[in-house]
Image 1: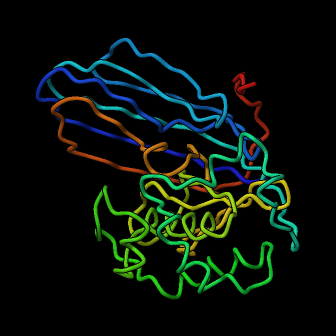
Image 2 (image 1 turned 135 degrees about the vertical axis):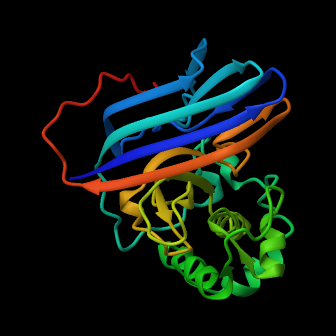
Image 3 (image 1 turned 180 degrees about the horizontal axis):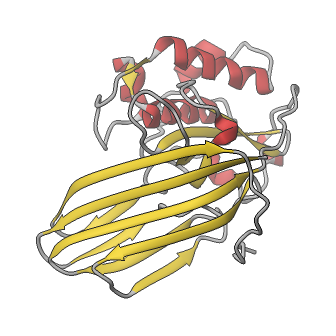
Length: 275
């Protein structure tokens, strides 16, 4: 077992009353359990919490008045990663479960229909299974340059493929796109994880549906994926943005810290997972 201590601090200058939707709390997921967590919002205000039952993603909604808004989330999380088999088959499209089928479709940042020819050219002749997704992961790591600050919030997988540069979100979007273009369901996963360089931030990886289960891949190779505290999963970055804001707002500070340690013998919080 392994424990991670998460500290996320977000600060905004709110020019006029605005509505916020945050996705920063640890998701309900079988790969970890929350031992302790605390959410502090300054100034104090009414908050609405809800959970997406399909994904386990947890959301916070609030109406912020004009002025400075500070959101601080702390958690101590015990990680329980499951071993990944060496051999996993791809699932024929006709056998993909109904709730997984949507992860085969093109989405805003993952134009798998447009990228189909490139995916077939690069990986279409490889043996089907987890090895083919490993090849996608390896190709992205070797072919795309990691450049902090490169691109923007609208950069898509096709643009990353052409420009050959991006950040972790872009690497994950490209992996998702190439998988979907090969009829392998794939989705984006974001979370907290400790890594030295660049400065800590939310980290994005992708999952592929193989052998009847979701398997995590990190094309950046920047952090141990079995130590990532999951915040959320979705079709692409639109589903798992850490903050969606309706109003005139300027972010003035974002600080993330993840510390690793041995698991202490402490009970989990009484949190009810989604059905």
